[in-house]
View (cartoon, rainbow, N blue to C red):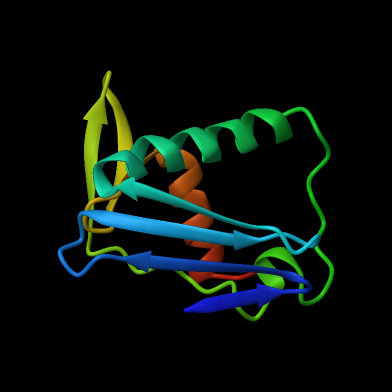
Length: 125
C-alpha cells in the first residue's frame, strides 16, 4: 500500500507471519529508501522516535497545524490497538497499547486523564 502526501510517498508492509515489517520512503528528490526490521525492533524504534519528538517539542510553542495537515490530514486516522491495559511502572500508571508485536507504553497522569475525559463527556458550551 503506497500512501502519498505532496511529493513524498511511503509504503508500509508487514509479513504474513507478523515477524518482519518494511518501511519504504520516496523523498521529494525522488530517491527511494527501504528499511526492513523485525517486529521485535519496532517497539524501541517507535518509542525512541516519539520520545525524541516530545523531548524536542517540550520547550517549543505548541505546533499549530493548517487544515489538511498533520493530525488534520484526511489520512491521519485513529489507531486501533489489539488490546489496551494499564500497568504500573515505578508506581506510576502507564497506558499500554498493543498493536500485535509493537507495544507502546505511554506514561499518564490520572488527574489529567480524568480532567480530559470529563471535558470530552461534558464539553463547555
